[in-house]
Image (cartoon, rainbow, N blue to C red; front, top):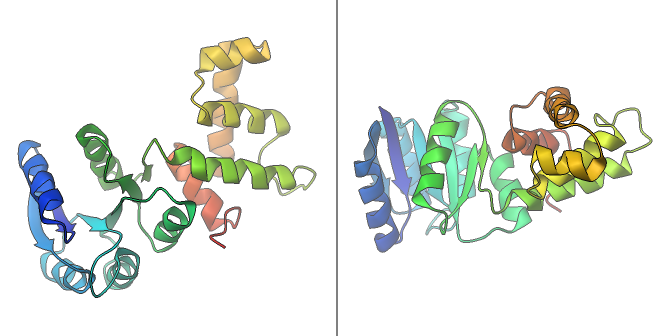
Length: 215
């Protein structure tokens, strides 16, 4: 059973999430906090597996609440909920220790996927905002193109950009006049070089290693 704490001060949104959690097998609502200070208190009291944390709340925002919670309880996994897909909010959330970032307009299916992925140890970034971070990553990596510290080759950068823009392996193969198997091999190498399992983890890798800065 995945114990979930909701931290959000919007009643209608909380009602919707409460109903969603109740309908999903193995999801359990552990509690509800209406502001950042309550989120810190409830996290210490209830020790949930996952906190769905609103970005903007009274008394303490979600990013500061996440920092305080994870300082004391590093095993709790936090997914930020936001109306904003702005790059700085995403980066600051991940730097604070959040393992996921979901827009409030995301579908219930994507939220379920985010909860399960984060619970199982992965990172999750909403599909609609992934290109914001990855495009910055690609741009900054290109600036390191002649630097021996750049983990990806020019071909790998090219293929990664096509994947981020939504192209399939088959489409990339046709565009670059190479086989689909070659494309899949490059994709595995891209993730292996960064020590990642998926693009969400690659995003965190980029932030951790200074390729993306919130300034």
